[in-house]
Image 1 (cartoon, rainbow, N blue to C red):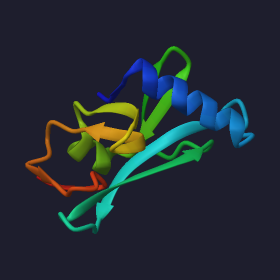
Image 2: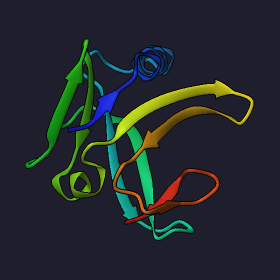
Image 3: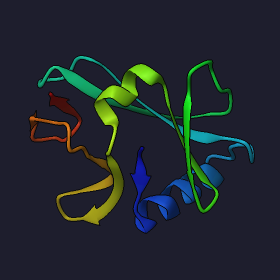
Length: 108
C-alpha cells in the first residue's frame, strides 16, 4: 500500500490541473536502477493502466505502481514540502536502508 498526505494530494491535484491533464490521469510512481544509492524514484502522470498495476486512491487522487516497484515502495507515504530545504513531492519509504542527500535515490 502507498499513502499520501493531504499536502501531497493537494499538490498532485494542482499539478494535474496546471498541466491540463485529462480527468482520468493519475500519478504513476516507480523505481528503476540508478542514482547515487542504487535505486531511484520515478514519477509522471499517466492515463493508461498496464497488466499488474496496483492502484491506490484517496479522495479521488490515484497513484499507480507496477508490481516490481511495489516490492520496494510498499508502505511508503508520499508527502509534499514547500520549505526552504526543497520544494516538491518526496517519499517516506520505510524500506530504504539509506538515501542520498537529494532524496531522489535509495538502497534497500
